[in-house]
Image (cartoon, rainbow, N blue to C red; front, side, top):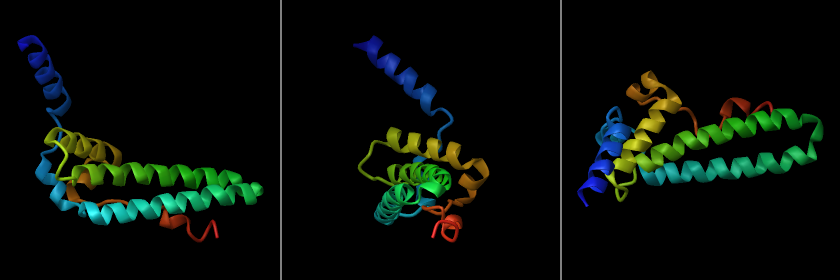
Length: 126
């Protein structure tokens, strides 16, 4: 099925021609550590979600913090996918490309990741 294989290779080349190499993932935390961070992120999100209904007068700020928390989850989920050794290289490279797009090229190349929850909001929402 040469036509199908050739089309697959063309699509993959198009998707990955500017994707980082999988070795870039080594500059980021390991998958186990990232899993713990993401578990805390989801627990924090559930906490915010429940509080917004109790403090209706502050629901706007809760919505903003929930969006920030979800964005940070996307970033760290991309790190987790990139560090997953049993994923195909193509999936890991796509995760690195997504990560670079989410945090910016400079932060990506220096390995500077944001926190996994919006810590800058902790004083505001207590």
